[in-house]
Length: 137
Image (cartoon, rainbow, N blue to C red; front, side, top):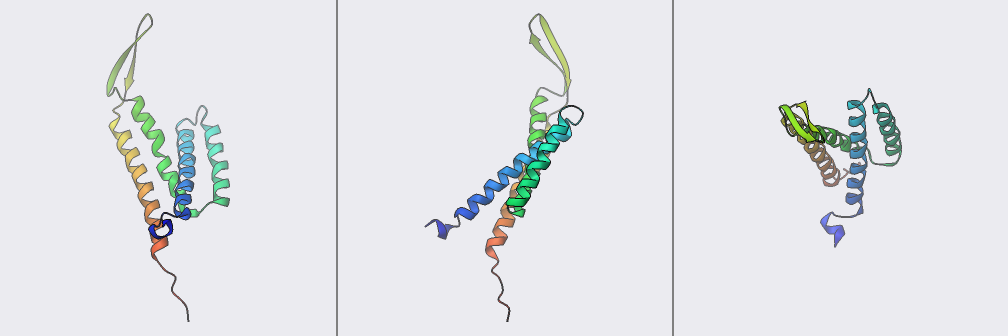
């Protein structure tokens, strides 16, 4: 019955490729954010993975990279969860204070990127299944 409901192997495989591209996008986002330190290694890793995925996977799964860019933004929102302003934490022998940003812009941008990638991937998959080829005379 799985063939009738549209949950066949093609649909599942499409989401697997999407997740692979999601990790490529996350790696590229982290690489660009940390370009002055370890970022170059992440960018090279993302490029190598992208080349491999482009050779083997479906082209529509590239939209996963858009959603992958959301993961570094979510991490930045998490790091700034105490902000905005000066946030002090207890450490051995005293306290440590840092200036933090408000996490809301990072959270909103991440949610928009994640949602956009997911929706576009779902729409392209649905469009590919719903349009039947027109026979030519």
